[in-house]
Image: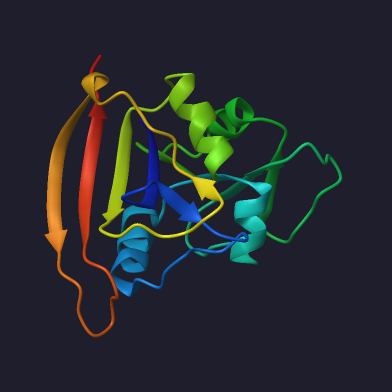
Length: 165
């Protein structure tokens, strides 16, 4: 199974100046818990925003720079190569973790089975967006609300969408 995991605002912003536009600890924990032990595939900008390999899961980065290296990082030339490499780890699920162009490619090519979408209930400024997807082709199977609190500026919903086959 190939899944996307992403947090996006109501206006589909996922980043600004190569950074997340918010600090939401409960969403970071959700990301960690959901992806732990499973391969994650991301673009170069997303990896560089992280600044390091995330522990406990194979990190696969897509770039056109064949000489790009970083300790513990697997470098591949395309999304398809990244997913194929991720499948060699024998897990039931592979995660595509960003950024905007990688998400767009994965959705347009219909290679995604599931989307874990943390919908941040705010409209924020940004320069990187999660692509709109045809919700008639998807079924929302989970929608769990989390209210804002002293540690979270925005309320959010943890949604899971599954592609209708």
